[in-house]
Length: 464
Image 1: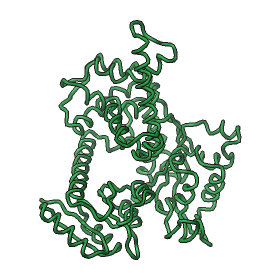
Image 2: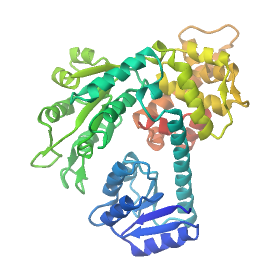
Image 3: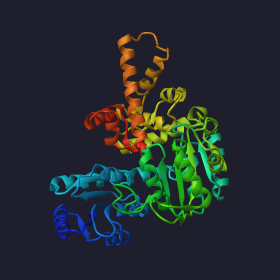
Image 4: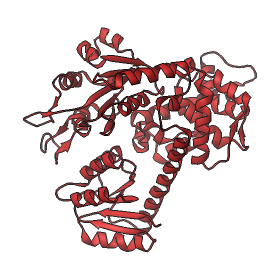
């Protein structure tokens, strides 16, 4: 069966061109000349990929993208526009667009992007199918491990999910806070409605209020159209505030009003709208200490912490390490097309002895790198040592330099560890956007891409 492409563009000549290009590629092509018709077509018979014009009368491309990503989150969307606008490209990426092309485009370029998007989606479906067969798409225990600590988390989630309590999830970076938030949503009566997440530290302060609350057209310079806020996109569902401790003080007061009044007022609007949303917040900081230091509002803290769940660090639940390592191995073998099947006992011992300061996210990245590096059907201890040498180099700087390493070797390992850490932190801050990460690191996109490939770092691991 051939893939189906939907083009939504008010330019009929461009629709005809797209049809000609992709019918020659053996694809079925359907066109809509306005946003609402395109939304109706996509929901009635979901396509395999969407080409979406940015500038259209009525509902513009970004609004179409936002609405369809709520209903069809797995649909790959490529944006088309005659205006090269970096801010709009970033916004489209944040909303879930796969790529962004400027018109007039080269035929071979748009075909290559569409093919890449379809290949990526096919791989995602294969990995998702594997996860379902492994049980990873189910409950929290299958995602986090069989340890008693995880079993206690499962019970806490089950207890609070049935209530309307606002929940504060505390835990170190990479420990699985969003997994817990998603489990609360999945176990609640709101499971059929949207789960919307935002990282309070990843969006510039001057844009965060508009991102959360939305704004009216003309509310401020550059507000060329009305924009629905993330709060409203979560209507009827669950809103996840990741790293809520990074929220600026002025927005803390506004969030408190939303929590207390259950109403939201977009920037520039003269009236509020009723908001039916369940809030879950997460932090890797001690918010009580921040309250004592005057950096976080006490009233907001107590409003968020109606029920608190603390996630133990991976090093404190070693039983979960081999379980997660084997799960990540099965996924990475499919994704990377490598026939790696096992982890030898000695390598598992090394993984179990590692402190995992980056928790489950670090373990996930380590296994992917090990699958990429191994030449055999099994991951051996030598590969695991090589993968973990970056974090080890960081420990060398603290004074634990093993015998036999020259000063040059110690310096090289430390530099590599510092580079890996800086890249990961930059990607985490911008939720996996490589272009923004390259700018933050004052390097070019190609250099960042090559270093990420060398270190086995994936941008998509930092999206959520």
